[in-house]
Length: 176
Image (tube, rainbow, N blue to C red):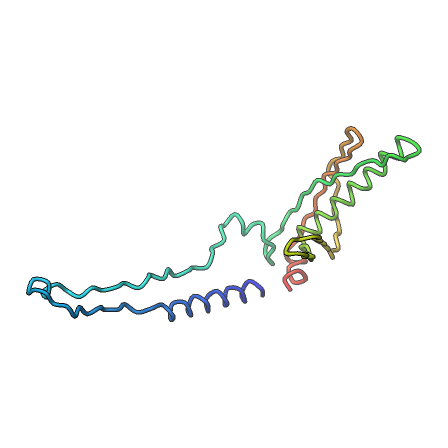
């Protein structure tokens, strides 16, 4: 819906620009000095040419990445988690790092599938930014995600996770 409204706005602005362009003007010379100069054609000032803007065409390989009612889309992410310092045992540190990595992978899947809401605020004093705040928010429900691989290295855990979305099931819910 937003794409169509932006496209309509773009077309309206191009149409208004095309209508507001100046027409070619013909300057008439009033000072005729000789017959040679009077036989010259009048000077024509050309108006700038307006290029017609065509809508972007989606390459065929990007259509495979877009969820539609006919296709299936596959998402794959790698989540990372760090073991906390104040743990009782190395096993607890590994378990907490894995839990953080899984949560990070779910967050990345939510960003890819449902998008991210971004809110930014700037505080300006004396014509300078004194504080800048950016908040992100995700509201997603992830089901049937599979953990493909788990790696531990130097207190860092990496979890590779995937989810496959069937267009017949999810297109009507996400296309709002």
